[in-house]
Image (cartoon, rainbow, N blue to C red; front, side, top):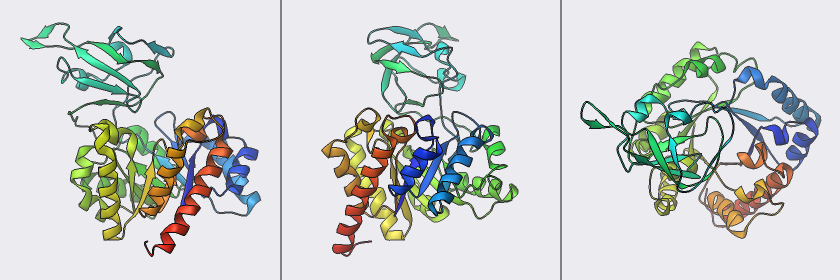
Length: 334
């Protein structure tokens, strides 16, 4: 089993990273949607130094932008209040999204934490144009957070210019794996593999993140083309009614087991530990069940990157996961 944390301000110091490694962490993810790999050199050096001090080999994953929709750079954190009407262009919502919006479309922001309903605000050649949204579920919104529109897909390139620049640094900085978000089909993975070869690191492991219905529909070919499947439940949960997500997670897990493909489970595994030193019972059950289902990796995201208790969160992840490993072995499963 691999146990991953996510690098961020809460765990960027070498002392904290050493404690996380002592707790059983085997790898770290760097989210490149909020900054380039070059700007994370100091964090990476701290992580590598911590691993050397502990005598451990630490895996380093980079999570690319890929074909993912995000809002733009905001001048400040916005508080969206339920019932407010807000200008969608002011959030930096891309034009290709605005052009396809229809009145009543549900717009999910920040992994669905915030919800807006598109409103008609004019017309363009007789067609309704939606440039405002009513806040149905409010909260604080920061720059570059994820964006999804229920039931709609948008054509985006597999790799951005930003992604290609980050891949060029992968070998130098010791990257061992690349996570590609919103994978739609095998063509996306072929594109990434070719880009890795061009960057001089063809042996870097490819993690295909299943985050939309296209990825679910093409799961068999993604299993064949990837080194590991990632059940990324944040945006995957935005693409369907949330109560359907558990069955989809189970289906993906079973398909990976049948094909002998490693898979990771991620997103909100210990979400309460952003602010609490002890997780909920439901959260530890979630980790245990993911491991029992055959997961080869589990990962924390904001819990370690920005939470108050990164070491404690990693401790609960690893100890719960190890109990799951024991139960899996006792049941004779993978």
